[in-house]
Image (cartoon, rainbow, N blue to C red; front, side):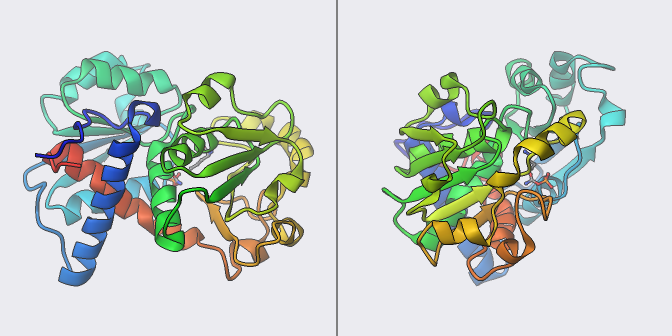
Length: 310
Ligand code: CP
Ligand code: NVA
């Protein structure tokens, strides 16, 4: 028996202890190595199924969850916004109670974070947040897993996020990085900084600034789009505010670390928040990072749906 308490859901990182977070990272490493050395994983999710509700588009989340379930011997299926009508055609509590009679887990990508919380509250199967307007915990677990693979010991390493510090990816990233003892800096224009409540929920201290000198000494430079899904009507306004926060060659040089790792959750708006030369440069890990979604989420699935201990 593991001494680390089991998780019921994977909705938000503030509900996950550093021990549980490390348990998921170790499980992801084990499952990734198992598949690499044996060519396949043990079918620990045989006869298990995952419903995947999407209110927004996706490439990585949809494909990595579907393939992750298949690698573990289970089955996943996609439910489109038109079919389910989460919160419009049918309430989230009703959707949760119906699906709980058919499947062993629910993954949901939504606009309102409340819908993820309601699915978890009203259903009787594990619920995974596949991105909401508030957070993106699967991405952050993957990002720290990738940082761990690339850098080894993470204690006192510095991750600097440049861009919209109030968005879902930034929120989950700062929560995740604090759990493994990393120093976190958020560099954002005024008006796009994290809420105090989120900073207080982080395990470590987070430095928030609009000064680009904050990149000096970074081990990792991270960015995300300036206009997230659902914010399209703000695009022109944001394009006028964010350009000096672009991850370009000058900003990378300003870190004074020629090996600084470049990360981005993708999809990228190339030429906006990141330039091609940086996205495709020698210290970019954008694609290994994207590929690790598969391994990190397999750990979440194996734990929640297969009772694999942390
Ligand atoms: N990073 C991420 O969640 O990608 P998708 O939107 O393609 O799923
Ligand atoms: N912040 C982005 C992340 C996409 C994976 C969005 O919500 O659109």
